[in-house]
Each structure stands twice: as structure tokens, then as C-alpha cells.
Amino acid sequence: QVQLVESGGGLVQPGGSLRLSCAVSGSRFSIKSMDWYRQAPGKERELVAALTSGGRTNYQDSVKGRFTISRDNAKNTVYLQMNSLKPEDTAVYYCNLVTIVAGLSYWGQGTQVTVSS
Image 1 (cartoon, rainbow, N blue to C red):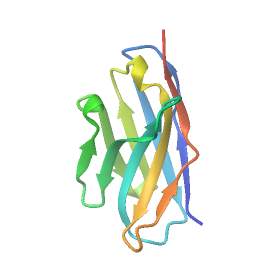
Image 2 (cartoon, rainbow, N blue to C red; image 1 turned 135 degrees about the vertical axis):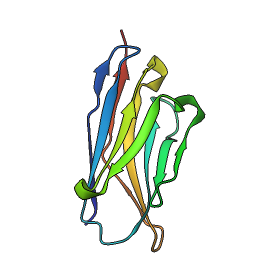
Image 3 (cartoon, helix red, strand yellow; image 1 turned 180 degrees about the vertical axis):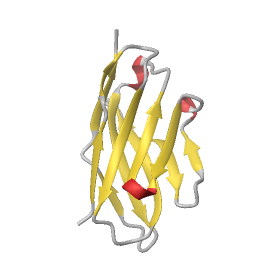
């Protein structure tokens, strides 16, 4: 059973930083990509950052230069470093894993990020 557990969310003032973590366990398949999505109230879930198994990254335009996705293979953990946070970054952030075989997709439970003064 694949499990993704996010942590690191919280309340931060505008301009502040947070680092989200997503710990993966139980995956028996090679990973195609690990991604971070977010969903704000009343809005659809959107891709924030993606990291392929080959190390390629892709970011939503609104977070380029502020967010960085990375992975620690030894710890089976993917991170999202978020700097210069803005109120519009407020959302529940979800970790997603996609496998190479069959393109299976797994989600974490989400972690709340609130940017407010």
C-alpha cells in the first residue's frame, strides 16, 4: 500500500517561508514523477511544481523563482521550499506520485498553508 504523508504546513506572514515535506512509503514501482498540487477554497486543484525521475522540474508561472521542488532519494521524501509567500498562495497543498508502470497516481492527505498577516 503506497502512502504519502505531507507535513510542514502552517500559518506564515506574507514574505515568509515554509518547507513542505512528503514522505513516501510502500511504493514498489518505479516513479515517473512526484508533484505538488494545491487547492484553494472554491477553486480547482492545480499543479504547482513537478519533478521527474530524471530530475527535470516544472513550475506554475505564479511560483517560478519563489518555490523549489527537490527530492531526497535516501529518505524517500520530496520537498517544496516556498519563499516570498503571498496571500494568494494560501491553499491545501497535496503531494502526488505517478508511477511509470500503468501511470498509477497516489495522493497524500494534504497540508494547509495559510499566508496572512
